[in-house]
Length: 347
Image (cartoon, rainbow, N blue to C red; front, side, top):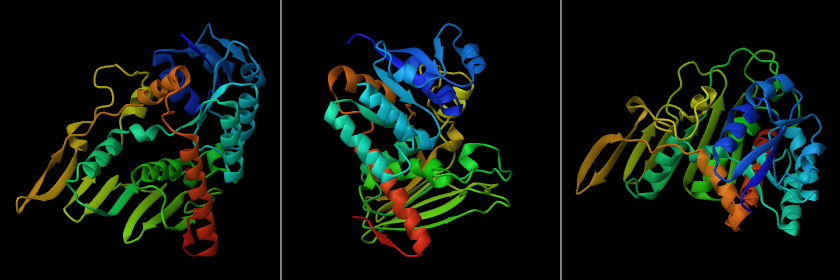
C-alpha cells in the first residue's frame, strides 16, 4: 500500500486542531474525505476535499483505508464498530469508549478482522512527559516512591459544550484524566489498588470538574489530579525517588502551535522555552547535585507515523487498543471508588 487514504469523522476542536493537521503532515497518509455538520468550517480549511454529512459515507467508501473518529465520546463505540465491520482500520480520539464492555467488543472485533485499532493518546509525546520519563528511566532518581501529575486549568465559567453536560463520558476524568492515566500506565503498568475523589466544584456545574486519583503499587503512590479552577498552577510533574527528585512546570507547546496553524517541521516545533525546563536533584559520588533539565522535544507527529507503519508494515500501533481499554477500566474503577468511598482492587 503506497498511500493510505483517510476519512475523518468529526471536525470540532479535536478534528480540526489535532487530527486533520497531523494527518496532512504525515508521509504516507492522504486526507480524502471529512464528515462534519459544520461544512463552512471544513471548506475554510479544505476547500477542495470531499465533504459529507453521513458517517456511513466515510466508513462505507471503497476508497477509504483508515477511518479517524473525532466525535463526542458517546458516539465512539458505534462509529468505530461500523468502520471495523466495513473492514476499515480505525483511529479513535481519546477516550476510547465510555465503558469497558464497549471497548472490549471493539478490541475483539479488530482482532478478528486483523485490522489496526488505535486511540489517539497523543500526550505520550508531550515534551514534559517525555522528559519526566527519561529522568525515571535514566535511573538518576533511583526507585520512584511518589509520582504526581497535574492537569489543572482556570475555567471558572461553565461553557455550553457537551464535555460539561451531564452525559455518560463527560467530565474531566474522561477528558483530561484519560491522558494522565495513560501516561501513568505507560510508566508503571497496572496498579494494585485505586482510590479516587471526584467532584463538581463550580456553581451550576453538571459534569465533574475535579478529581484526585491515587494509584497504589505496594508502597509506591501515583497521584493524578485535575481541577478547573486553579488560578496559579503548580508543577505539572513532581517525582520523588530514593536517589533524587524532579519537578516540572508548564504545558507542552504543541497544541498551542497547532492552534496557530503551525505543523511538525516548523522551526522550534515541540521545543519548550528555557523557563519551562525542569529541575532535578540527585546524589552522585556522595554529592547532592541540583540543576536544570533541558526538555526533550515533543513529537505528536510520531503517532500518525506509527499508524502508517502499523497499517503498511504490520508494526505494533503507537497506542495499542488494549492499552486504551486499560485506561477505561481505571476510569470505571475510579468512579466506583468515588461512589463507594473506598479503595478498589485492580483485577
